[in-house]
Image (cartoon, rainbow, N blue to C red):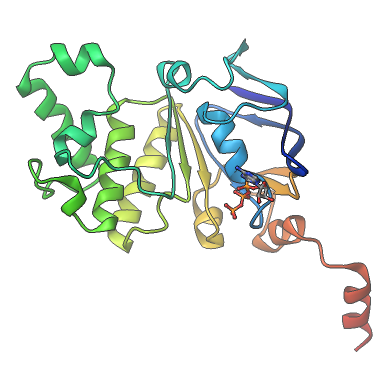
Length: 248
Ligand SMILES: Nc1ncnc2c1ncn2[C@@H]1O[C@H](COP(=O)(O)OP(=O)(O)OP(=O)(O)O)[C@@H](O)[C@H]1O
């Protein structure tokens, strides 16, 4: 579905991604795992059109993607939710959810159609209790993030990217988002998931790709890895330390 080929990106002297190639298959939850600074967010930002790579290409179903063009990627069915809660605080909950939709739908759909869509995405997230007319900035932070996730779902994306987006949520909300991720994958869509929580990675991932110091350190499919395998790939222990530990 998505073929990332030889992607590189530097910020001045810092190499954030070096020659990274990863295949993302439809109908999967694909986790990208790596230590702090390994390049995960840079990859996500490139896939979202916020950052332009220095070199490399990305293909979606065989077609080259327009890189660095957020609007075009949104139109192609990409939706990204970041850890940072990107809410419009002075707009209502309802407005925030349809903010992500194309202008024509927003303006042409009747109020009843818009409300039906908003209620249906909130239902999916088990969040129908959210007051639609309240200014979103008045909600607790975790509820604001649910609104941002609802905004992504309202676009009915083919590719949903969650960059540590569930970190601020409580258990129940996080489980609701996980259920959505699993359902989307079952429908043949792609969910790219960035998380530090190994138990979530082990539970949800069909595929896992590891970044280490900006390089692709390997990809694994469900059943072919343990948590220890992934941790070892993320940061292989220094040889001397392993030998020292073995000798003790
Ligand atoms: N805008 C920027 N300007 C300069 N350096 C940057 C910028 N964005 C990222 N970097 C650097 O690029 C490298 C990769 O960062 P990136 O945020 O992609 O990693 P990450 O794996 O997402 O880390 P984290 O888990 O801490 O978010 C890091 O060394 C980071 O300091």
